Structures are given as structure tokens and as C-alpha cells.
Image (cartoon, rainbow over all chains, first blue to last red; front, top):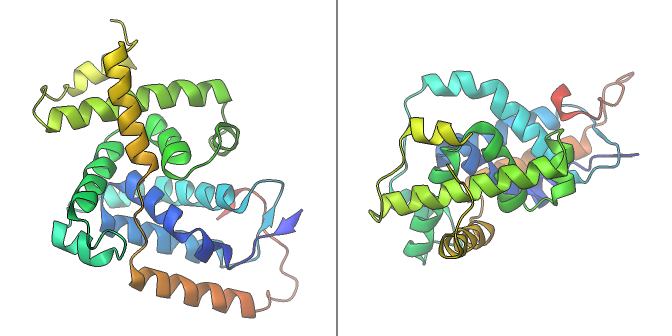
Length: 178
Length: 61
């Protein structure tokens, strides 16, 4: 058993930010979510019982997201102009296509049903193993596998729909798959 | 309705999955500065006397 090093939030900040963006679907909400999560985590010493720092921090991020979602849903949804995304990210600043792709991907992930979104964020966005994701989401690895399979397929269809290759599936059609 | 993708669809799904995994978006500098300041402050501030370490569950946040 060990304590969470406060500097862990700095080490894992980029992954937390990407996970938050995928959960929220907007860059502004992601910044708020990350800052609120870290403020809560650092408010008192934390113990890790076997899990990795990132897994712990993602758990805190998820819980903060879920607890604040109702409040956030009352706020108008804002989509940052591409110029702001470019200016705010030193890595993609010189790569408009990368920034555009990132925004589209995050938006598509954020439209997933919650259980699929959480699994995809944990594994594909944050980089947890299936085992770590199962522990984080308090479910079985087989369930993570199933949710990931469906989540990836839905994101792919969403993106293809946006590109006009096929019409976006209606919510009722998506619900039939669940 | 079958949800099993055919080979072509599976290739597209794999490509999107790889794109998601390759996302290399960094936190904005302003957020990084705020978080670094918060971590520094937490690292130098001793816990209040008598304060027990919090539960392992992030749900306790």
C-alpha cells in the first residue's frame, strides 16, 4: 500500500485531459473536469491499494464526471472553433488535420452510450489494460471486451455517417443494438 | 440483426481504433501550469493533524 504522489497528476495530465475530452465531448468542459478532479484528489492524502496511479486518477475523473454531468447538461453545449483547438495544443498546432481529426473523434466518442464510452475511454484513450479497465469499471474483462467491440463499431459508423458515406444511424436504431 | 462486422467493416473499425489510440493531444499550457501549481502545493503541505488517509476508492473524492 502506498500513497498517491501529488506529482502523479502532472505526469498523467495529458492522458487525463484526453480522457476528459472524450467523456465530455468539448475541450472547455474537459479542462473544467480535469481541474475539478485534481482539486478533489489533492485535497487530502490518497492511498493506492494495488492499482496504478493512472487507474486511480481515471476513477476519480469518472466519478467527478458522473457526479457533475447533470449540472453540465444544463449548460449550453459549446464547440471550440478549430483555431482555438490549434492554439491550445502545442503538439497539433502545426497539424490542422490532426487537430480536426482529434475533435471529430472525441465528439464521436462522447456520443456513445455511457457504458460503451467509459470502456473505450479507459482502454483506447487512456491506455489501460483490459484488466485495469475491468477493475476501474467494476466489471468483468469479458464485459470490457464486448463493450469495446460495440463502442469501436459505433464510433466508426458515426464517423462514416459524418463523411456522408452513409446516413448517421438514428438513435432508435442504435438502441436496438444494445 | 447481426452485429458481426464483415472483413471490410472490421478493417475500418481497426483503422478508427488505431486513430483513437494514436491521438496525441496535450493538455493546454494554462491547464498544465495550474495543475503543476496545485501539485506543488499539495506536495509541500503536510496533511492536517489527525487526518487519516482517504479511502482507496476514488468514489470517496
